[in-house]
Length: 233
Length: 219
Image (tube, rainbow over all chains, first blue to last red):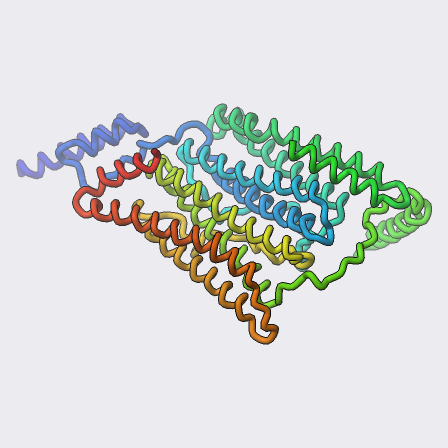
């Protein structure tokens, strides 16, 4: 009888403790360190999770996966211009740099997700809004202006996806609001994307004007050389 | 298709056709005349090219596998920044290998067509994205490197003796042996050494052993 009483009292104490501590790491640790601690008890609140970042992890995983896919697509575009038949070292370099930038951005974002207590999910992918029709093969053997148009579309869709995540994290709803994450996105994605988009749009405008002549082979050669020198400097 | 849709479509076709006629002189000359280039210098043979192309995907799969390891060890509840840094570096190195292979193929006059087939959505090997501890990830890494090494040896074998054509690709074989295999063997020795040090401690000093080893990796 006395044993039973003690057991009930202990159970009550534990219940009281967990009710009081709520979702705090200190409460978890106290439980875990008490003499009656069960081996299996975890310390679920001892982590880096706070704010709205946790609710953005799926979107961020998708954003990482998109950057990796785009990085490989740029690598293939760069490869095409590196072949002896196309032979445009400027365009080759332009897309190689974009491939590198997208790769580095995905690494940085994974680091940031884990800084905020998140986990990268390599399988979480939303539908690709830039994909060709499923039956058709993706085309990477583009002419010069076509490749710039493609790059511009890719960069804009990445920028708009950043806006979308930013929007979720700036919601008034405290479950989603996360000032740190919006700041990170602004500094590391949104600002840079504006520069990249403006550069690509500028190149597109220049090239568009050069292509109006009846034979643009010389213009193309000079433009490519300009690109190469600018990107090598 | 509703009547409305049909009429819109018909209108669109007309508009498009009209546009094509009137705007012909403003049309961009986007595609230039292809150059006439002798092909005698393009000497690599198909079986060898095929093997080299496949290796690009193999290197990128290795890259993604390392990226999954890096992401795993970066987590707050795993907290092994040394391991994470090591694997992030490995992921980028494997990507560089894929790019080196592409650059070699371009130098030899390859990759003028079917560029889109070169990379097919690489994912972490076996879709594994978590590991029980550091030593198990290092062991997976060593097995991965051993399989990549075998793949490179296969390319060497095929490119030395590609069957019918009898074209022994000395230069490619030398490049793969001198550059790629050299790096593979050195990398494998490094991983084996890391596993040796860490695995010895894991039995009785697992927690502190892995903690200290991680800080050592961090430099």
